[in-house]
Image (tube, rainbow over all chains, first blue to last red; front, side, top):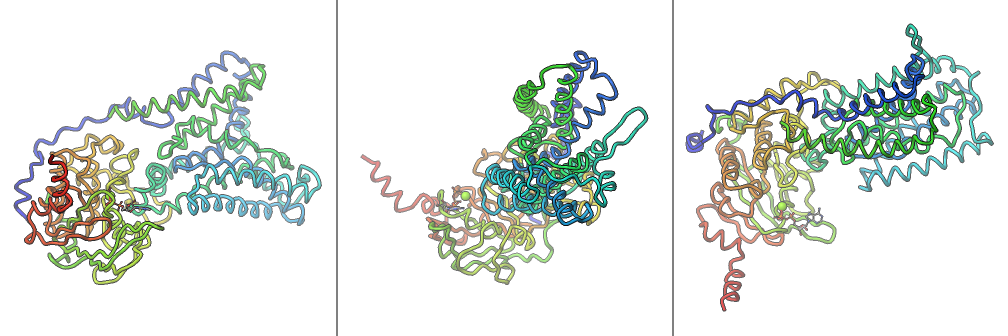
Length: 352
Length: 271
Ligand SMILES: Nc1ncnc2c1ncn2[C@@H]1O[C@H](COP(=O)(O)OP(=O)(O)OP(=O)(O)O)[C@@H](O)[C@H]1O
Ligand SMILES: [Mg+2]
């Protein structure tokens, strides 16, 4: 090999600077969910002090249940946001899924599992269309999914009215397969003195799977990359389009899952519900440390964001306050979260 | 440094063998003609420098080679086979690796994740196979050390490195993954003298290891330090194409600055 280059090589190889290990504080602070975890602890302490009823085991299961119904979809939304995109249709997609399953089973007098599967296909198709439109047209996902939001909202009401003549689906609790579907999507487990809704278990499973995918698999690497710098990711061979469409379909899958829970928990679905929940999922993800600009965040963070929501909605009730204040709390929480995340990200980036 | 590059270089590379040949290549973006009738050869073990002013079409030219855009006209031959790349994956599969001017790395991701992005090591080949994080960290660390790039922590976000270090990591990864053709888009544009020197040394080392290098730059001095062959683009057309033996640094500088135009400008400014 060329000796000219080798001999002129001034690289200070023998005197390679000893690398300081990153301090433990730095490592902990660098986790995206750290701000949310601190906030969750503060809020828990606050309600434990101010609302005596909050201290019971029954309250724990209620809070966990409320958190799970937000957290299941929020996990998918967090991944999507890490991938640099938004989904405003996730709230109504939950309702669309539940309606599709209920109406298909009832109108065609089929086993409810057929409805469940048809609904899954419909949900994944919605996710696919969202992702495909975003990638194909280059229109921001904010606008694409805003359109989907309106389309689905209208269709939920219109189709239900057309087929059932009312604003809700017919009760399907006496149909074939209902019991087994209810066991999967809406049962209650008794763990000693604690009654746990099965959605809590599912929420935990989805969060763990998402965390593992994000941090331990190639797809996870790609999700961070497409959100952090789409052009770079594409240039080194990351299949950007597939990753993003997959993320939209992931959100749709989780929305479907929650839709199934609601259907089998209540046996009937109101066609107008779900509107506004898309923001709750997004806020849970942001409170949990996901950057609005993509490339940063965690699934565990979204779970903590969901717990903050669960504690607050229920805590306000347990404390006997006017629940209308919840929305105000939401706004303040969101603003604080964004500020804290910004601050922590800057500190973490400097403290190496 | 040279040794590590040679270690990963393709053994079949023979100095002087043509890797990329373009003839009459052009590119139209809608109504904008960015490139027209460009001929270019990249040989193994040589540095082909592409010079030109802003908007000359340099980036467009290499985006064709790296599969980011496909050419609208002309012939583009890689390893003796005519191709039209539809995606960067196809180009990478042919051993063409590119370090981009503006999009070399994902700033918020760790150094080692950037190093392996798109070519991750996994403990299996099923869809959700876990990454071999330990191996990736170790290799990234070793490779960077060997090349004399000292990062404080392989776990730190790459955005916290200096511009020169980022470029070097991007070059190191391209070399590690066995590039046959290395394309560098203005790798020294944002760098100081010392850091430019480091990048230029890698460029020379890659050349000596037998890779074909395409070096894009504004700077004729940098080009002349490493180049074997010089091409100047102006408004999408090739206005100069010389071997090193046929052109001096002065000529190159004058041609880059616009030659005749510069003389006129000098006359105009002389009152
Ligand atoms: N994606 C695109 N769509 C439309 N026009 C483009 C696109 N990319 C480049 N161009 C145009 O093509 C011409 C050549 O651009 P190019 O980026 O290749 O120049 P360059 O030589 O790399 O310049 P610089 O030194 O500034 O990097 C410019 O006029 C530019 O505006
Ligand atoms: Mg350019």
